[in-house]
Length: 283
Image (cartoon, rainbow, N blue to C red; front, side, top):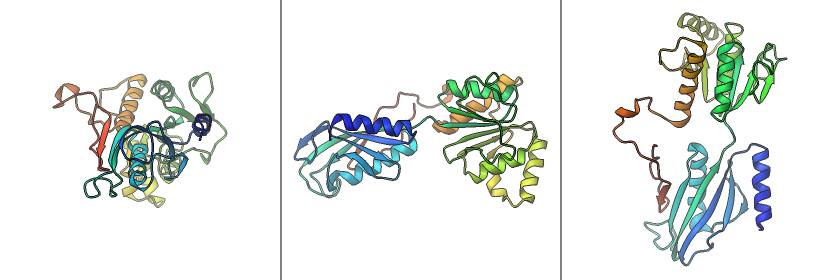
């Protein structure tokens, strides 16, 4: 397949904001079925929609690592031992191969329900952090949310709220339909849900939802009150505390002061020997 077709596929997937992986053979030694430079595009459901980086000896391991890369967002260098059927990838094909696995993920969706200064600052900071920002509120205007990618204004019952497992949802409705927005986020199985409210207001909202049949276990995933304890007082500081929590969740941070971590180092590309996954490194 031509390079033109490869780049066309990459463009199409990117335009549709679909996650995918490009697996590239960077080095081969001895007998291997693919040559250096061979590429494959693998999508989220495990299908290879372009190219080829090897047959049975390599295909399953590359697929496994590609799906793992889509989950954690990390690149990895996969070392395939094609000579040893016991310690390698399972078949003695007679050589070694290194495959660079690179995930391409669309901008994570940040969905803000509500208006006001906290919501406005969340949208601004979210854009700077590389999120695709949607604001759902009848009072949302382009003037108040100039950086937002999408505004939803005619959505009284929040039925148009765009929630998916990859979504980061912040509810800042100022007590207007808190329970409705929270129920929508839970039903959409959003990966992160935060409620901007006091502890007293949070209890009222939770009690209302439990009365509607939502289980206490479901509500355990809701971060309320929203944000990290950084001593925030102003709307700008509160928005920063919420975005800090989102980044922590997204990147898998510890929340500990950097100076107290036992070791801090740049994360090298992951190298996987014989199909065994190396533990994720931290930067």
